[in-house]
Length: 167
Image (cartoon, rainbow, N blue to C red; front, top):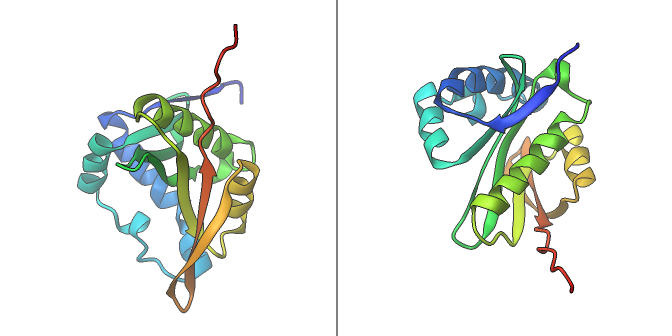
């Protein structure tokens, strides 16, 4: 490839590329569950732009192209809520998802005050996602039955305790 993937904060100009990547990335999920009306595929550009101003968004760039994205926020209870980790299909299985997740965890810890844990969810049939989250230290905390064909698997990871220097 010759270029390195760079992870950075997203800005308003990234909104269209994020939405296109989200649409591309969630095709496999829609097919897996037989549901093409899932929110990531129906989200509007206006709605995504609003989210950009309310949450932390990171993008992974290969040159000028956005090839990965993840978003999150810290809630009032100090929980880092992570959502919509998407990696371009041609870039999958090279560690980029893990890098994005780790970068967002760091960003939330730095900018969100005291983070006690990180939480996310994925569909029960999304085995690749479940493997990735397990490798990143997330443990299953529950299963939410959504419909006859979909359950959300909720996962959590404790936030790293700040290292105390000893004299």
